[in-house]
Image (cartoon, rainbow, N blue to C red; front, side, top):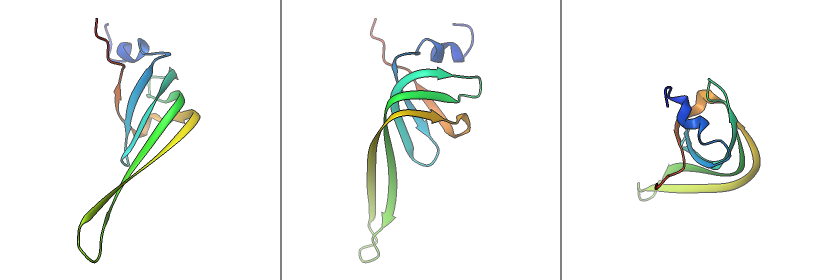
Length: 89
């Protein structure tokens, strides 16, 4: 590996974890990407985390919503982190 994006190149056709702005997380199969980190993901599981304050008890309530998406285009300017699959060799 010579450049940072080489690690992502090695993850083509494997499941990756993508953390996005706005408390959004994606897990899916990486089909393609470019130098701006625009990505095409397949078989995606999207998790959106939101927090609310209960007005009566002032407690913080954390809600997680999950949905499945067949194919997703991710714009690179919302990407915070890309984690390749764990390799144990």
